Length: 122
Image (cartoon, rainbow, N blue to C red; front, side, top):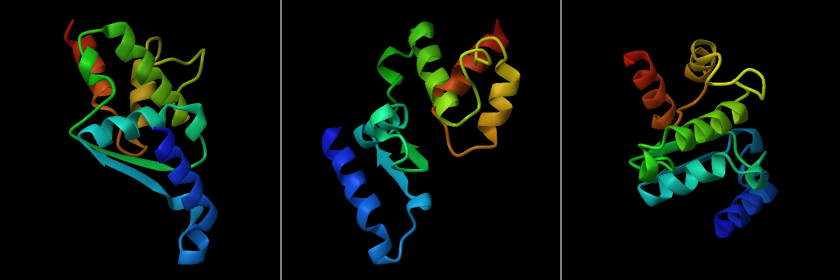
């Protein structure tokens, strides 16, 4: 992940020389790359280095998909990074509002939707 972080720093530094815009950097990954992109989307080390994430066929939450606590923690971090939740307005105590906000943002982890779908089913 540190190599990707260094690449993102380089892109941020030089993107304007290539006609790009630092406010429009998107991180994308497929499979393991998707998992890496997902991990970076919740990492404070990557804060401000990209604005959007495209994740295909991979998620940091997948290996422990049956761990509700782990998935809730990851979902909360994603919601906080997207300014849809905070320490008092959480995905657990205000799920409808947080989900509405998340749906207005870019693509999100399947974990968020899976938890909320499971919660509605119980």
